[in-house]
Image 1 (tube, rainbow, N blue to C red):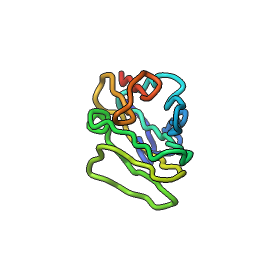
Image 2 (image 1 turned 90 degrees about the horizontal axis):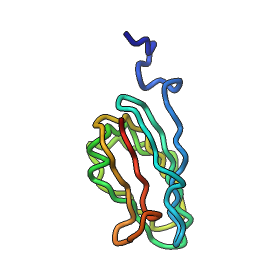
Image 3 (image 1 turned 120 degrees about the vertical axis):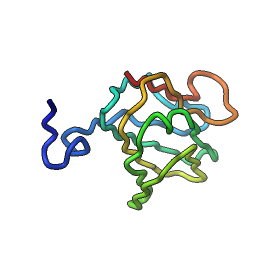
Image 4 (image 1 turned 180 degrees about the vertical axis):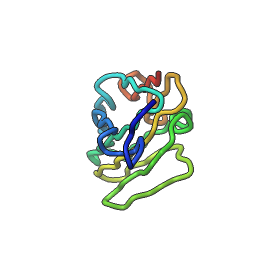
Length: 124
């Protein structure tokens, strides 16, 4: 049915680069909701400007996807599970993952309120 080639679903040709998330004091985390397809291979950058110590939390989101790796400063981490990522200083983390469980999930800044302080992922 599918012809993913030698590398399978995780070949770079099959990966979709999502618009980055932003962690900055008083700024929106995401520009719009993300629409993902179950079984799709995705990559997203999380950029922190260092203006404040901020985290993104979303246990439900991380349980609905299979994380291939998290890359920070060219260090590749292949976790069994993730609940949140916290940035103490400016930097970028890149997450590559396969969307698995359909539903609506959020990554949000803990303790914050308002729709601009979260990223919404709709997996179909």
